[in-house]
Length: 93
Image 1 (tube, rainbow, N blue to C red):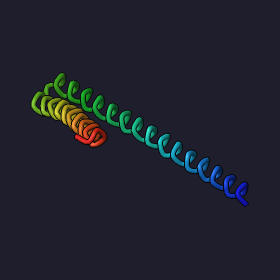
Image 2: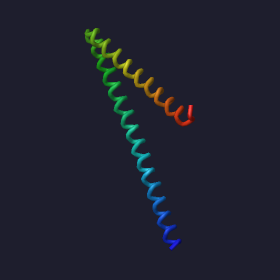
Image 3: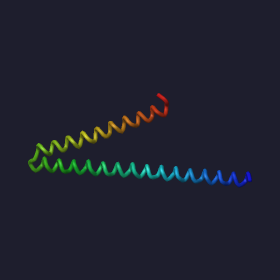
Image 4: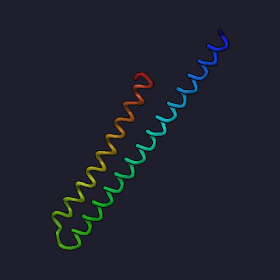
């Protein structure tokens, strides 16, 4: 009986480790996809704003450029803030 119970515990442990690995892998893929999508959006807006400025639409081109830079800056600052919060939560500060 003890042998069967130990085997069940081992299988359950392997199952949980497998699930945790799948969750971690999915989180990494999701994070990478978000980075690629954000980079693509930022580069598209940058190219569009340079094109607008070069074709004589300075007002809207500069507005698009500033919004692109502002969005990137805000995303960086928010990410930095969240990482600091997580670090403080882990250390108990």
